[in-house]
Image (cartoon, rainbow, N blue to C red; front, top):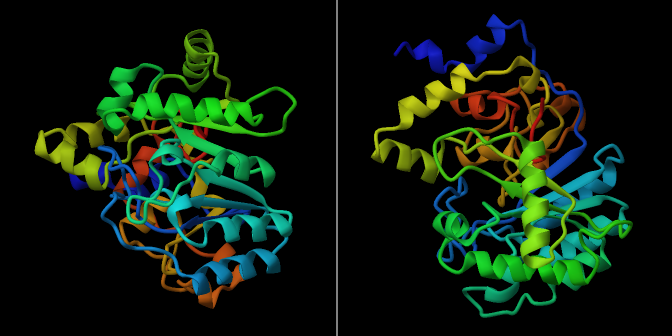
Length: 328
């Protein structure tokens, strides 16, 4: 297969697309790779044995950047399980004092498992989220036990259902509460997700009828061909086939809405990347601009050249894929 078929910048040029940044409205911060789970598809390679964690100095610098830029209206905290970082509660509290909208990538089961290293309980999280009016974004591979446990581990489905119930109990997902609970779906294998709209309708119906649960929106996300998922594809000889599927499904409309045009990703040690996926592949910002949160230069970063690579085809295939679901 010609190398150019996996050449993302060439695809952009062929369609006459210039994907320059449009804004920086979101600071997405990965506070570490420690997690109570070790999911098969995890592009972060997070697990209970990871030790990488954002320290207080770096967390404080992130808050300083937020304080200095009213146009950055959102703090998106991810991990690992971000709640396992010792600075998590502080970051949420400080960001809310600044009037920022805080999103938390919450895996639901951490409410029950707690910290795998210290044993610290995290049962307070639903109330904490509600107190600070965080938007909670949680992965639920499917509304049945088999597919969820297959992707995320034995027992995850039952804990996830109970975690959603606890969030519902404090108001999340309920009409007029203003407490947003959004679920994330990604396929269990090497194929593109089905229609976000139809899947959302299915999830809402089944979770309501089976368990009496509510949520606001469902985000469909394409499996990115990096780290654990890429290794699994290579192990089974499916990498080239999957990449070809992504390339053939390239959608110019989806490309225009990719998240790197309005987001900056911060690693646990302060390094900056165009997106969470670039961060996990150790792809920093373009060398012409500051690459650390400690050297932050808003204007230079806003006018940077976004760094693209082969995996970017995952964000532009079909209806598109971003941290907020489809882009087209």
